[in-house]
Image 1: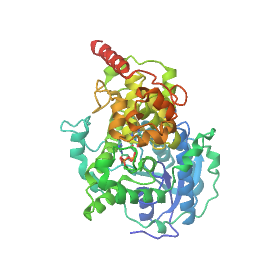
Image 2: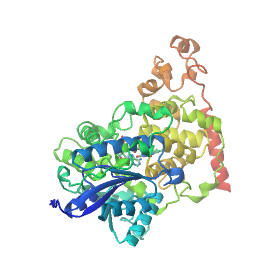
Image 3: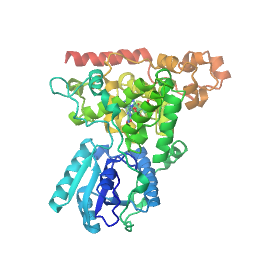
Length: 483
Ligand SMILES: Cc1cc2nc3c(=O)[nH]c(=O)nc-3n(C[C@H](O)[C@H](O)[C@H](O)COP(=O)(O)OP(=O)(O)OC[C@H]3O[C@@H](n4cnc5c(N)ncnc54)[C@H](O)[C@@H]3O)c2cc1C
């Protein structure tokens, strides 16, 4: 029930990783309490240290704020933007506008937790009530424990116990009836936040993404109509649009996991598909990543399995750069890295292949890979990125054992059988028969020439021989075992 109280007192809704108007528990609390809403977003480039949002995320946040600001303006409000420490700014804004309460969505990464603690303390000292909500996950990361009362480190039992959370409902209110504090003059414009990176790399992202809450819902509609029913068979094929691409919208809360689960479950209830299980398990992996990050907050920088701290990684800038720019000479790896650099996103199967190649064939630390992903992914998320990299490096919870080394040639042949994905991102390979797409160095010289492939010219030779890379990785692992 929405209380319409035009003479009511004011409450700040502090937006964080919940940049949306629907299913937002802070807005729901404000509306239910009859408050006039003062919407606020604070950008603190120092929060997070080396895990402060990277270039692609900043591009995403800029556009998400632009869209949220415009949605709020249509309803008669004005999103207040501020830059600096939330612990100082929130009480000040509350004082300036006579706000009596603050509602906000919790975040669960270590920097976010520390910020909200400071805000709570400062508000407490100022005598202003604050209330926080879970706005970005299906359950609190601490909610589910194993039989001994400890955090889970294996996904399957975690999900077996947690799975009923998929039925949790979004909060119900009519966003068009939100009542905003009479338009305060914003002190800072969006451009004043300086979110857009100085170099123009991010401009190409505009061809690939529409950043708004309504675009997130259009993507969800596509997901339930076209993706989930064939998800279990198509999700591993990077040449088709077989996954939801909801990850960046989830990362900044333009849509909530509750909204996604409800839509998928409703579509399944109509009996039209059976995609529910496999797709919702992936939402479960996102929850599990937060469970791990919350309980083991050092994992963005340290392996969960301590013995891997002594792994003999190489400091190899040349190969690191080849990998970053998609010039390793292995088409499945290079296609993925080029897709990432071009679109800010990479297919999950290919993320696994490129990550394995970096940490095994190139023996470069997973933290280097995690940092590059952090800067270039529009869906960069500290929990999922850490979990993905530690999984690939064999040093995390429920991780692939390090000795299981993906073959970048057969991974391509298996999951991109006709080479359509590789050819899309590596144009010089466009005309090469599929038999050779993932190992162009085996093609006869005349065939390469006929098809315009110049190895070492328009496409590189492999930067390392597969068998040698594999053997070197296993030897490195052996030093760890004997240490
Ligand atoms: C090395 C590595 C790094 C990764 N870094 C990130 C990251 O920074 N941010 C991120 O959101 N995901 C990350 N992932 C997980 C996964 O690759 C992406 O979530 C997925 O590719 C996003 O595409 P989608 O939305 O189409 O996914 P879908 O297949 O449609 O899945 C639906 C949703 O489930 C969640 N999900 C799917 N797979 C995973 C997974 N393995 N772990 C956690 N959540 C998952 C995502 O929120 C996703 O949007 C990483 C995986 C690896 C191997």
